[in-house]
Length: 172
Image (cartoon, rainbow, N blue to C red; front, side, top):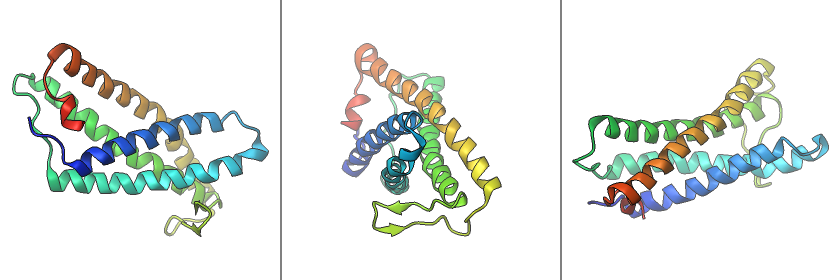
């Protein structure tokens, strides 16, 4: 079975690690005192922007290199579910950092990328109604991402331990 390209595999694992770290950090950030939030969320925003850039590159890499074929013996519903989970993760892993970026810019807290330079969202600044919508999106996306990650990992476990095909090896 053909593997994903090296760049797709590296991006997959980098994005997975960053996404898990951002999810954990986002949930943890809800528990810290208000006076510490700005210092905590500054690197969170920078890592989120990094995730957004990596996701854009990942989508480019997949379009350029293609996907390995799914196992011929897999039922159509399984192939549809696998690609649906994959595309859902791509969409949500773009939407989550985008909504955070919009939320920050619209609420007057423009991200400063690792303390180096400001990264305002184009054309949006001090827009409370937009910030409110972005905040709601940013609050719902993590739960959807976790749900799809669980499905993705469950599928990997199924392929590795039960089907004993080489699907997992295409990403290693």
